[in-house]
Length: 494
Image (cartoon, rainbow, N blue to C red):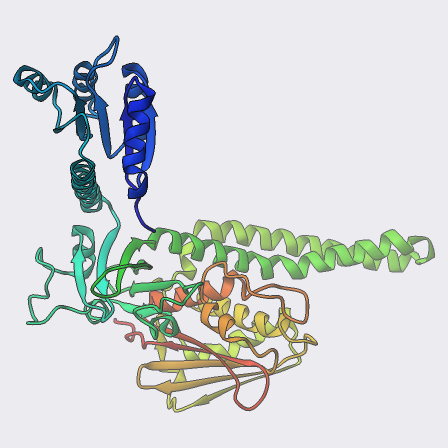
């Protein structure tokens, strides 16, 4: 988009305004007009013009006084003023200089001189404005809490504000002290962070054609001495004459990720704690309400007893929820470890609620599953399984998936694959599956849009401890495979 300079022409005579308009109309300026000093000041405040062509000889407030008032206004003091005058005596020129005029043009006008001076001053004022805006922007970026960088098309850091340098461990110079060449953003980030989701980072720097860019994160996993740290990476493509550049924001989202994790784990926990006893209670009461005249006294007592048992169990579970709220850190990844052998127990517990008819779990390349620990608590691992199995169930066209869970030892730790025979996903759904709150097109079941919040929180729990997540379509048929790779946790001491 081409910038169009704005010129305010001030002259009490219509012929003067029209003459200047005729001389400048072919120069692609935006022209505005004022016929007296007071109107000129009001329009200057509103328009913030790039140049004011100001007639000296006007009744009431003359051009000298208008110029003095412009220079006294902090918002207008730097607007260039060319005084238009028929006066050629030295005293008038000195008066104009003292008033703050930048230049003078004498009547009658020399067409070439007028255009040349106008063109030069508007160009210089445009550059001045750009420099002022850049200085203001630079000052603002230096003060903010977010990290900001500029990278080129080869991922090389051209600029990093203080917060970005802090996040990335850069010295005050924008170069990597350990390298003789400009440092790559991803190369530098990978020394401290895991780049997730890996599928999203496979295209970096992001293509300019990406209308719906995936959310990218830099995650510093939990350690024995520190909590996980999350940076969300947002990009804005910049236009540059020499080469393609990107403006990058690094935003600390650790707190929001933790809050979302806590909400999801709490909701998941109470969901399958309360569902079964509530079903018993409401089911038997509904039968009693509809059929009690036809029921025998013995049947009524039986149903009331069952409903009472359901209410007692519901009360017990609600008390457990209260206890869970008090000790909610039991599902935090760093609270406990869990052996992979426990999965054999957790899967049937989860499936008691979901009632998937075909589900199997196998172990490979794990000589001693009982002693193989991962850095997730058992409650957290159970919630992860629940989310993955529930997705397999509700996204299956007939809600009857065949699920195979494979637990295997790998170089990085332990791989947990959950494979189903449900829907095949589109490339867009695969790319955005781990994005919080992503809602894709509805599946043929017509029940649940998108991948839901739970899958993104599964990834958050896994990334928090330095693990990785993958989601891909099965090669041998319909359905998807969710693969979680968890690092090994150190054995307990003492």
